[in-house]
Length: 325
Ligand SMILES: NC(=O)c1ccc[n+]([C@@H]2O[C@H](COP(=O)([O-])OP(=O)(O)OC[C@H]3O[C@@H](n4cnc5c(N)ncnc54)[C@H](OP(=O)(O)O)[C@@H]3O)[C@@H](O)[C@H]2O)c1
Image (tube, rainbow, N blue to C red; front, side, top):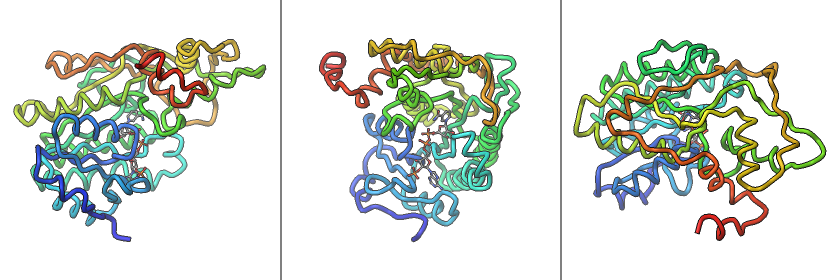
């Protein structure tokens, strides 16, 4: 099967609006980015791999010829590069494949984006920092603790090497409109919350997190794209993050409270689990650069935003009428 398949559907929409290609469009953030740009009049071509059909273009980003053809066919003004292996433990187990996507494919995407003269927005992570001295500004020195963080940092460097005008947007752990609760490290806590059994559920209470709504990240991407097309000084690294600091234990308790469920089976775990990839204790991002440029968005309270994402997974669908309508 060729690495890139062009969809007839895309031909119909190509002539309108500024054009954006979104890689990883089948993923959690990519779906939100596609929707955000579409809702603001952009012509969107999303790409995926295993889940691409029928809505998106199928393009294996590790196939250089396929990436070249993708950009020659779609001729974007902007490319938002979301595709990545983002699970640190999977990354350690499948290092070659993950580095091939996070580093080599990012390099190819950046080179081909530069060749077609488009703006590149590369999505990165707070895991480029070691978490020992937060909060981290854009100029602070990265020191990733695991292979995921190292690969994303290398991807950043490839992006800036090929596209000196690129925008790098670093974000922390994401939640959003998931296809299944396991799709995000935040929504997957719902499984433990719902199991209000006699058995206790121990949840990490060491690592400080800033759960961030993918829909807010998508809005920031769109604002960055629109401003950067007018103003070439909008380039380099930006940080965006939710504002509430929470451990996984605290997120789970907040979910239980939002749905009036018991939380006394949830137990705070104050020691880090052995055997998983090391993670920063607190990689809080300082987001003032975006704020000063009026390119940020104000996140809603975590309890409100997460309830909206979880209601499809509740037993009681009356939530929809009572809370959101
Ligand atoms: N999720 C988080 O908590 C988080 C936190 C910080 C930063 N980030 C960053 O945000 C970005 C988006 O993350 P996400 O959570 O939306 O990821 P995700 O849901 O895991 O989606 C990954 C995407 O990559 C695509 N993909 C995988 N291998 C591919 C290949 N060889 N060729 C083309 N596409 C391929 C997948 O396509 P198919 O599924 O169709 O195969 C999917 O669309 C990533 O850069 C990640 O590093 C995420």
